[in-house]
Length: 337
Image (cartoon, rainbow, N blue to C red; front, side):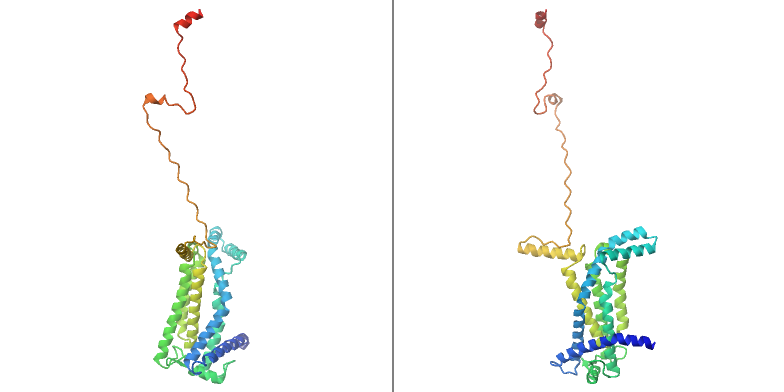
């Protein structure tokens, strides 16, 4: 166990230094405006730390969006494989992974930003927890700063306390509000992705089941575990969720996946904007051309009814009427004789 603890400490040590360096740097900036020991300075420092971390994760977020889009577009092919190899699970798994590899799709890329945030989350949790319980120095967080951090109050609430170890009801109220905000933003972010940026074909199958599970499981996990988080950590996670929701809204609005309600909404907005300025509507890069309507079937005209006496008189155009041979006369017979 001590060996594993040493490995974990070696992995987390750089994160402690990075997290504490960014946190102390933002605290120095906000100390120019607010008192250094105030909760406002430390709370805004946590928000600044969150923004720096999320800005650093933007390339991973772009990769996550591309992978999620590829997963959606591959769902019809995945369904075909399920129909073909549904009786053989090993063959189905092998063919599915081969399809992902061929198209450069990583089914686990959607979890990368969350997974990479977790070590930073634990590092911040450790810094706040040690500052609250021991008020000891940690990395760039000196002993004086640790004491300030532990005793900093925001609206009369210490940001180092949690719902479970609160010394008065004010801490529980603020922690409860932040837990609800963290849970709600997690749910809305996932629901926004499913309701606006998933085509109808992707709403069924294993990928859709995975998304639906995340829609309800993740908020539940955060709600249950959030009551043990210090107010400062809840502030970090709620800010991170707001960043994710806003960033996702921007991407879905301006670069929607093909065949989704978000793409149709963008087409409608572009058409309305083009009509307002008198320009032809702008087509999306991935938008499919609508199929031309089929030609109408030929209408068969019924011939006009005519009396029997007139039917024989009508001849096709360009042809002279045929003369019927006349019977030989008596005079012609006499001449012949």
